[in-house]
Image (cartoon, rainbow, N blue to C red; front, side, top):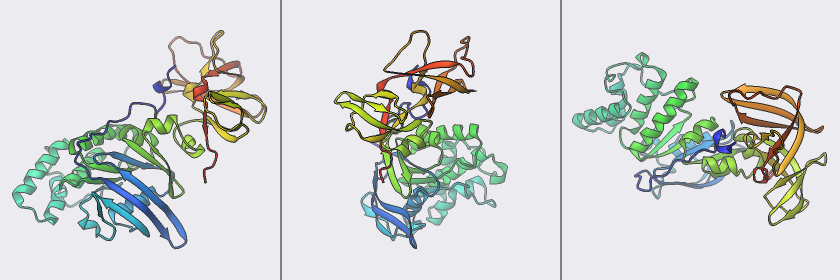
Length: 379
């Protein structure tokens, strides 16, 4: 079984267009305090021109605070935010020329679709002819050509989101900020809109900084992702890098499903090591931490196989199945290994294959390279 076949973060990454016309955004020591509460620790980050960059993390991690500082809604307590080399801290929001897409769309209910899209242009006092041309172009881009005279209340949630996208981009900003724009939509529509937003961004060439709590959403849309925790960036990377090579226990546990448990490094060499669980079991890893170091092992469920016949691997562990769950074409097993360790394995469902029975003994096998070793607590 290929790990890439079922892992939500292990697919191909989007390729960044080096000729994109989007803005370069640099955060230099940006921090935000609310009284004695440090909502955002000093943060350094660069978003490349034309990049779709996502900020994800649990509630209170600082992602919306960083986005709001970029928009100008909550100025940072210290630090600099440079857009194409110009520091925008202190510049009023309406002068930053940044497009913004909100969670609740924020469309004007008394205006038509066309009037909503044209509103930023009227505020900029463009000519009536140019406003009309841009509205027509944006209606075509979001596939709402024949709905310009409708009111927002006459549109579906997905159509309203397209209007919000068109309004944010109609004045050709080089930077778009999106704050959980799909959270109000149902699952199927959310997935459909993910593809539409990617196509929209590719057509515009603008840089996007995107906030979401949905890991799969960020993985499918982004060139790179920053995972935030307690006001700081925990790790930055492509979706695949973050999933396959997490740096900390938090990152490993936040992205998808993982078997994570504390281990001690034994027999460490340049080619790998054995790691020992508390009950004395040992597993192989291709990592080489110092001998005796206490760290965490992270093993993704889709890298573990239920052995058939005499099948073996770098790691072999025998246990008893405590639970079996069939979901969306895959089978998830919870297997107790010894007294204190329960591991989850996930395999693609195979037509005609007889599943092991609940309560039966099975052997789990996986490769040494799939025993990832991560820091327990970097802070």
